[in-house]
Amino acid sequence: MATFLSKTSIFHTFSFSLPKSCTPIFPFNKTHSLSFSVRANKMEESEIKEDGEVGVSNTQKKIFVAGATGNTGKRIVEQLLAKGFSVKAGVRDIDKAKTVFSTNPALQIVKADVTDGSDKLAEAISDDSDALICATGFQRSWDPLAPWKVDYFGTVNLIEACRKRGIKRFILISSILVNGAAMGQLLNPAYIFLNVFGLVLVAKLQAENYIRKSGINYTIVRPGGLKNDPPSGNIIMDPEDTLSGGSISRDQVAEVAVEALNHTEASFKVVEIIASPDAPKRSFEELFGAIKQR
Ligand SMILES: NC(=O)c1ccc[n+]([C@@H]2O[C@H](COP(=O)([O-])OP(=O)(O)OC[C@H]3O[C@@H](n4cnc5c(N)ncnc54)[C@H](OP(=O)(O)O)[C@@H]3O)[C@@H](O)[C@H]2O)c1
Image (cartoon, rainbow, N blue to C red; front, side, top):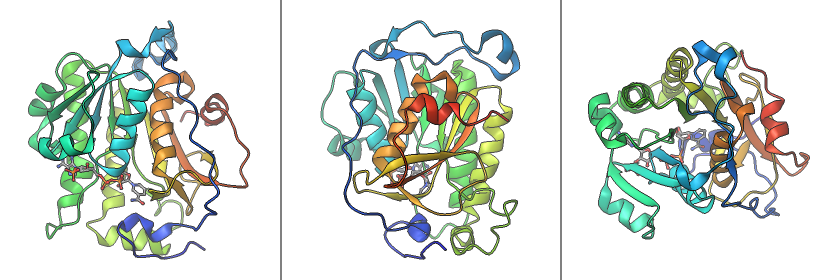
């Protein structure tokens, strides 16, 4: 049974402790070719799903990262830059962002509060982003509706902004247990505890459902409890509604989000991820390839 731990993050409630022996993060390849399709569309899946596999240099692709100053968001930005992408970092607080990121010609910082509505977000995203990674998460406050404002309506706003801008690739960082009720996990302490905070898992599930029906090529990444520590094991990737505990380094979550851009096997999929020192090391082709589209 997962351990209940009250740390800085509410999601640590379902963290397992893992040994600290960690493998360094996987090598970056600045000339890695892009294999995702910026035009792929669920409605037209059979005709064009493979479109875009043309070995385009990452430097030609700009990725918008929402929640870029967050613990996972900043790692996503750093990994994208290291892999040669251009990045537009969407943040609530530009001054904070300037303290988080070093100056980099491939990095642009723009104000993007997801509660501001899709028109404003579409302005921030502009017409030069090829894909969007959403790593937002509500911050604890006295507002009981905060999870809904950020984790549901905020994500819906981002999806609608993508529609307005013709962006057809969306990576969403969600969470394991979002569908805990259907999984028979209603009594899982993590499920109960998290939903005490404004039903955040329910809000996230609704956001997932929205992107799944949007026609946009999505990858929904559902991590277990997040850790700031470096990776201490290999990634386990399972289909939706499978995992009810476990944890993973935010570095690995960022890596999965970025690698989803580079792998057509990740298209239109929901993946649940944790890490374990006992898990075999598998390539991202294998990991994403083993998950079925639903
Ligand atoms: N913590 C866990 O154990 C865990 C487990 C599974 C899944 N998750 C999910 O994984 C994701 C990343 O988690 P994390 O712990 O890395 O997140 P985090 O550090 O709390 O960062 C969340 C980010 O969302 C931003 N944000 C909040 N409200 C916003 C708004 N109205 N508009 C735009 N941005 C907004 C924050 O902006 P500021 O930087 O300005 O505050 C911050 O950058 C979240 O969706 C979280 O729910 C977390």
